[in-house]
Length: 329
Image (cartoon, rainbow, N blue to C red; front, side):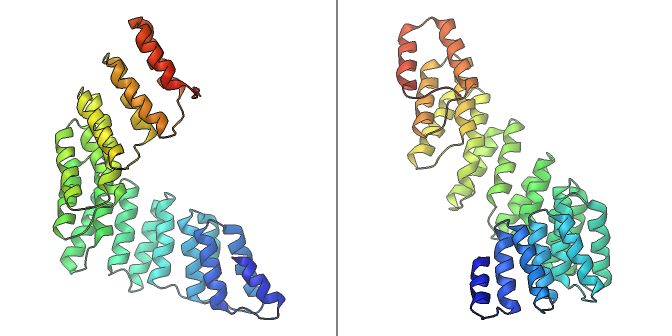
């Protein structure tokens, strides 16, 4: 992207600050921090004076990539030049602080933002709720959620998905489920990340039937979040001894042109071997290899140990045929 600027400069067609801003924003999105910084310094050398939008763009890109040290430098430079941050600048920086675990600094800056008359908006509350949940401060996040309702500040999908992820990760499933149902009741869609962690924690709690019920509800609503969470249900079914159902779920995924995770195949094969269901284990192994996943030693070991225990030449020949052209890593 920066090559376009170089071509413009070489042809005596000087890019303006807005062109720089768009290119730097694109570089930040591509994790090209050093090139973005170089252009940021270049525009200053060419006599341009970055405005608040330019500084916000830089801080947002750096914080999104967790380059907090560089974001601090840009923030300090901006404030030293007397450029006053607005709500978007504050939220970009606060988000970076939360993502790097700088909890005290994030809360301090949030209070500063409030004192400047910002913060009474959905985006500001979402930044704080998301950060609190990310850092396991879910009870404080819920207090902010209640404040939003009291003040009439609109909640959105980001609000609910942050709370679902936060409470689910902390294994507070009653709260996670509450916010999940609230999200659906308000017509929002669960994010893949939020729904998957909710399903995973429900399965870990041993309630695979509830996980299946929630999954079907989301599937019936035509939401994409249902796709990836199937992996968690398949593993849970097998770990609870529902081997045949787990295999059927796997087959259904593949039939619907969905690719199960490699770990799902591996865990399923291991569970089937322990349960003396070697035929099913070989079937799943065949699916895994057709999907292009490499065969790991842990799976090889499970199969070999089982074959040695059974002393089955027929099954051994099937394994050899299945593994033809594939090597253990």
